[in-house]
Image (cartoon, rainbow, N blue to C red; front, side, top):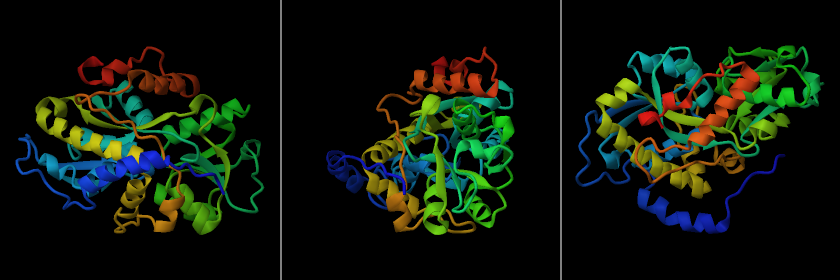
Length: 338
């Protein structure tokens, strides 16, 4: 079993007052005089993975409510589908992987602003898995095999392509299958429909604990060590129309990010509280206790405070492994041009 990352005792102790203050449910205390916002009712699509822990803490601990917002969470099966619905106006805000957002921006499929960071990868958070007894023991064994991935050429593909390339294996020698949503992936792996699967947490731990899946390669290595994975975006037009709403959402989200980054117990609880219908998203206490976590960047600065250098890293690796255009400027996706 993989080594799990555990926050230091000092951070856990320091974070307890924050969690107690935030409360443990959506009834955790709305502000007596919530700030005035242009749009109090929001539909927010977020990929239901550990990368989104800061959002789920803010949602379930009532931090959005305290800012005068009613947030309806929609589970996103992939960032690509979420982006298309966001452009149509069906989603106000989405949270997903940077690669898909950057690709959509470059292809003029959307005009987006990254207004907050979500996660930075840590060991065990994103990895490649097979089943016991599989002939796949190393990355070289993947040649000619099928590998399940939740969407084509997204963050998980980029991580896989980078690690494969650094081990002398062409990603083109692997047959990536992108037809299965993430919650379904462990079952497809167990059934032998796919030979291997790229799994983020908590799906990785679910596959390990429930089905005995075994890791072949951790993606936290080489060019993708401590790689920025997820962020939160709005369309530029939406940001223009709803500046107070966006600022309120950002304040609550950053509180959730801070708690996620300093209190493992809060992350575990948030993942346990994910809905079970119509598709099971929540995890058991046992799974939550074992899953690897990310780093969760947070800021006390104004809305849109993000680490531009860290985001540029995503673009650089996309240049290297996806043939992404060299002239793309990340400033085009930052509030006020970065």
